[in-house]
Image (cartoon, rainbow, N blue to C red; front, side):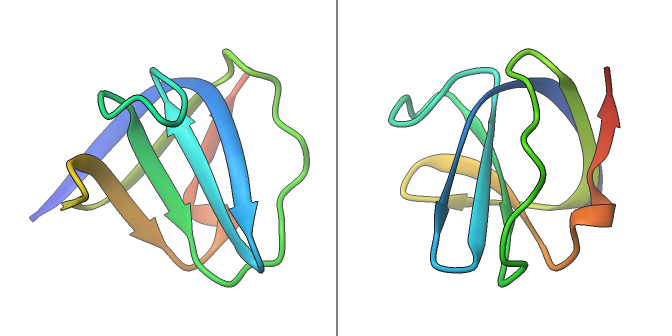
Length: 79
């Protein structure tokens, strides 16, 4: 089921071409919500505290709720 999720950016990271955006709390806090952008190369810097929204299927990975996306355009930024 697709869900709409919004929250303040608490931190971000990357691994190779993958980008991880942590909402609410930052890594390694398992209470964070993670937006995973696979194989996009990178994103423009986004100030912490900026509200991000996206839609997708919520899954759990190692106890952390997340949405996996393929395009940066699937993340809405509200400054």
